[in-house]
Image 1 (cartoon, rainbow, N blue to C red):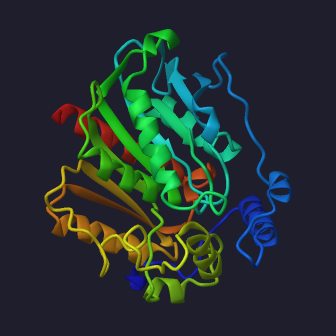
Image 2 (spheres, rainbow, N blue to C red):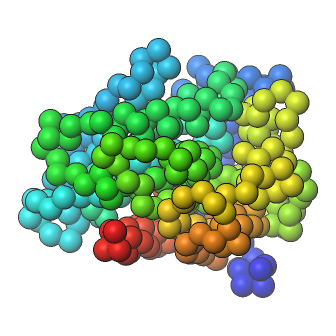
Image 3 (spheres, helix red, strand yellow):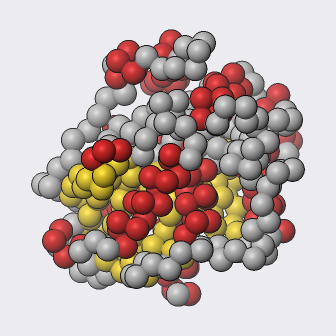
Length: 338
């Protein structure tokens, strides 16, 4: 796989500085006893408020699901689309989105995710629902998956007319980046065995999903010094997230590994898998794609050879816009088939 990639990623200086800053913050906030200095991390995780007044053609609202678990989501409703200045009139698909951050960092209202979800809402276009789930290590597995599925059940019963939005819940897509891609996969698995009243999950979008295993892959070794996600940080995240005594061959990590459950008989929607050439996780993501194919699932692979982990939030990179285009194409294909 390595022969198709450049020797190093080309990144704007601003992006390199931002990555170095976040890497410093995440390393400093993470303690050796697998706890996190949350107050310190707040300095490096600026938040964006919701805005009923449209920003770049998208309104947003924060909706509480369960205050006892701080479970809420940010609802993004496009008022105009990027391809036309006319107001959106047709029924729109729904994208239920789970943010990345190694299960341990960031939130639905972190600026980078707020900006990305606004882009999705405007440019697909779609109603986007970005879920704020509980974080490890304070809340270990399976809390994040429970929050994700509780969010789906809540959305199934929502009245979107209160927000002047025309939504078709039979066109529901579950999406996520990095750890959010892992959550999205497992939430979709659970959804395949549940009867919703109004919702039909017809697509899964995993953007550089966070999977792993006990063995080191070629990409983990070859790309260990590349900006973005490091092996050390990845291992720490899994240790903070998993139950006591579990290793990285736990089926939630190594989804097609030695302890995996056969999903060939489970209802599972069409899936888009996005991989980056400078992401240490690329080999695990490729195994995920191959595992879905072997299980008889409809799956599509998109590879960007010259991007790092988390490239989608860097608007200066052309692949960030290309990704939005691929998501739009995937959603249109699935809605036309349903």
